[in-house]
Amino acid sequence: MRLNAFVAALCGVFTLAACSSVDSPTVAAATPVATPKNVIFFLGDGYGMVPMTAARIYAAGEDGELTIDTFPETAFVKTYSNDAQVTDSAPSMSAYMTGVKMNNEVVSMSQDTKATDANGAAYINGADSTCPATGNGTPVTTLLELAKAAGRGTGVVTTTRVTHATPAATYAHICHRDGENTIAAQLVPGGAGYNDKLADGVDVILGGGWQHFLPKGAAAGSSRTDTRDLVAEMKAKGYAYVTDRAGLTATPGSTARLLGLFTKGHMNFDLDRDATAEPSLAEMTTAAMDALAATKKNGYFLMVEGGRIDQALHPTLGRKALQDAKAFDDAIKAAIAKARLTDPLLANTLIVVTADHDHTMVMNGYAALTGKTTDTHPGILGLMRSYTDPTTPALDADGKPFTTLVFGNGENRVSGSRGLMATLTDAAVFDKNYHQEAAVQMPTGSETHGGADVFLGAMGMGSDTFHGLLDNTRIFSLVKAAAGL
Image 1 (cartoon, rainbow, N blue to C red):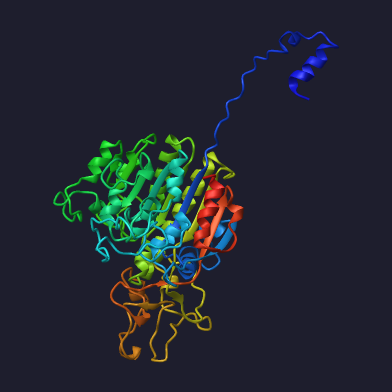
Image 2 (image 1 turned 30 degrees about the vertical axis):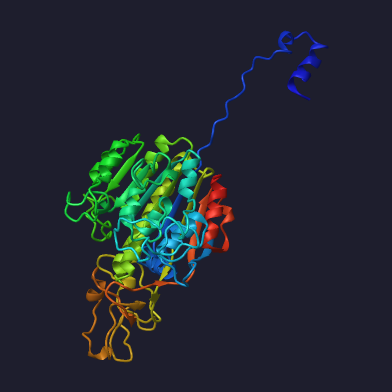
């Protein structure tokens, strides 16, 4: 029975003060309050299963755990691209962001897009170019663009250049990932080449790569070929601009638009980072969350990339790769803790952690337990010692010691017998600039990605839909549904 009818019935039996107003109630209707829905999407670039396992042992020992290990919902993800068994970062991250399987080197474009510029040639790094006007695919909508359309805040945080393939896949559309000057222009609201699907712009952008924003000749090392000052253009649109950790720390939490470019190119590896000058990935992540939560009442979409894991793995720099993996995990931990301050059960927050592809790192030999790595104990980064004799380095068929961590391919391959090489020591292989040995010789810095499936962890709002073996394109629809986009 409706409330008015019920009260009217009572008036027929009792004398009620409310009876005089039964036919014309004056109770105001409650105004519905939108519940903020937040998505934090963590991407460990190149963070395959072996790098993740090695990072756990490095940071916490064999019986320890990383933050990524604590996620209640887990899955494995296929990473192949539209034209390659082994993907690069551009189509893999684009698959997560758009749900479309695309060709290697392509950023958030349709499946038929070829990785060439308007002249049919591959881009050079930083080229001021666009895709052909016709005949080479079309842009496809990203999760970040959907969040913008829904009135939510948006943020991109990375330790690489902010125009690099992974962050670019959230907000840009281009036929080849190397056109980073063009990618940078897509971030400038109202400017030439702007991606108007970003509405008034990505709210928070933090990472490296000022070389693609400052005009030619204005700063040593600028890679722009024109005189545009994209930083000045973004400041004119209301962005606060910071260039170091102190500037980020001093930025008011109420800042609605924030651009932070802390280095000319990629930010430094965590082992090399000057903590007084460059913020950590965890610090950038929580700063972005603060800014988005303070100014975007409908919620937000934030992408956070641990990008330099991949860039340490390519030159087979094992220690730098594992430290950057630990820094990535620290950022995940910090984000969960901050999110729980206002959403203790994560009922309105979805956190997803995954990788875009694997690498060729493997764990070698029947190694004894090493425990976590410390400044005085190499742990998994040291020489391999057998579980049958954990005090003496094991020897190969040439009578030489070797490391636990090696690569399928890479720049450090011994020519001929290892018996002719200098004998390795723990001190030598624990050095942060030591390149792990590889089975197949590659040019300097050119260890390749691997094609194995990668891990995914999810927690919070809608996370129970992430399970089993998933194609990378499926992640898009699961995030979209969970976030109500």
